[in-house]
Image 1 (cartoon, rainbow, N blue to C red):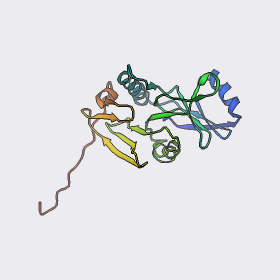
Image 2: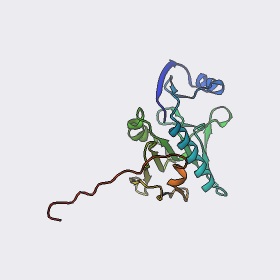
Image 3: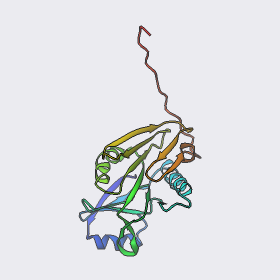
Length: 203
């Protein structure tokens, strides 16, 4: 997710009308409009790669993947936002002119940036959790090979796993697909993390 800059207060309908002609995407919450700043080369590359990889994996299946042009509404507080990629499945529900805004995401992807990663990991995640259809959350770091995956289990608890190698495969159980991290980080020369094993003096 890119950084946000608050603009004027407008109605939801005015927001929808403005987004149709605006060259810059905005998020909306209770009348407050926030301009989304442009991302880095790595950010835009990862957004494109993960959306394309999800789309390929879903070919021939009922669920669909969309890129960062797909707006999502969080109905618990009315916020409208643009995830970096999203997967939704039938029966899906849209609102707004031309069914422009998705209300039923199943998997949401966010590419992290320094200015927004705390919000993406905490406040925004908590808002996404209020969406009944939302089952999996994928956070992608842009300066190293690191993907955090959160999945809601049958008890409503969120399970977490990190993927840290190009050879790892991200499994999205709610939609029955797998995505290779090598496909996500293709074209980017970013390192895998260095993990240090601490050994006690008596080992």
